[in-house]
Amino acid sequence: MTQTHIHLLITHLPIFGSLLGAVVLILGLWMKSNETKIASYFLFIISSIGAGISYLTGEAAEETVENIQGIVEATIKEHEEFALYALISLIILGIASIIGLFLTSIKSPLTSTTAIVILFISLFSFVLVARTGYLGGKIRHTEIVNGAAAPLENSEKAGDD
Image (cartoon, rainbow, N blue to C red; front, side, top):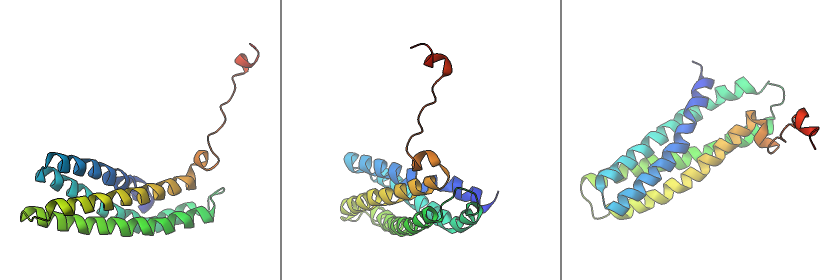
């Protein structure tokens, strides 16, 4: 398995992890369950690690596709630049989640406030990482670059008018 394969495989983890973690954290806040909050923090930490791996394997993925006909260098650069913002946001989310784990484990009175702050960071991170994924998809999926492809008409149906 090459770094390109790893990049394509792991890039989905931060997208779904940040969103799923946010849903779990909302449930934890609603149910006033520290165990559920802790589960969300672990999801965020795993998502942060996935973002780091994605970012580190991105250069190899770029080298793989940059000479393929039809690949636009500007699209790759836009994806790469946005990926840095998403990475920074997810690193902040991971660090905040470690702090949340610590505060929850010592039963700090700041547990709920910290959870709410982490929730907002996670939603912001999700937007950034989802946009990064969309831009990455534009590199190889021409159907999202040019809009939806027009459906092909069946020659039999065309004569039935």
